Length: 163
Image (cartoon, rainbow, N blue to C red):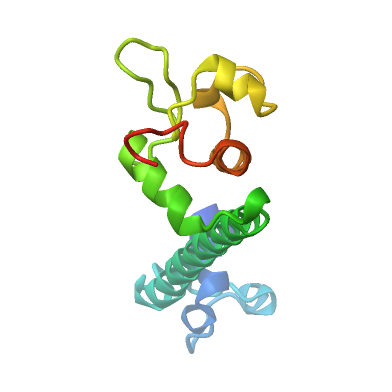
């Protein structure tokens, strides 16, 4: 009698998940049917696979949505930063200068270390347009803004080959 009333946590969890196993006809112990555990046996795992698959699918969808929202936010920030460029310089002009100077890489440094960033600023030129610190360490939108300031002030002369 003591064995019938002593159930492991796993058997109890399976009975709770699969009540059909507990409601089998002919419960030997009337007290057991009162609490709903009766002749509990191992339940098949197949009823659990569908909810687990749905859970994993929901996680994948959530991750996809978060990444898509982040990409959209970054595109919007870039569009807004380039839309408010001083001097009326076009985005295409800046992109062509950047492609020629650094391949569009905002963290690149020339081989001798004197020119840095997406537009290959020298420290003096970077400071003259209001930049501080390392041009290659500045965020890309700031480099775009500073290059637009320089272009509005000096035209394409700061980039003799690429301008």
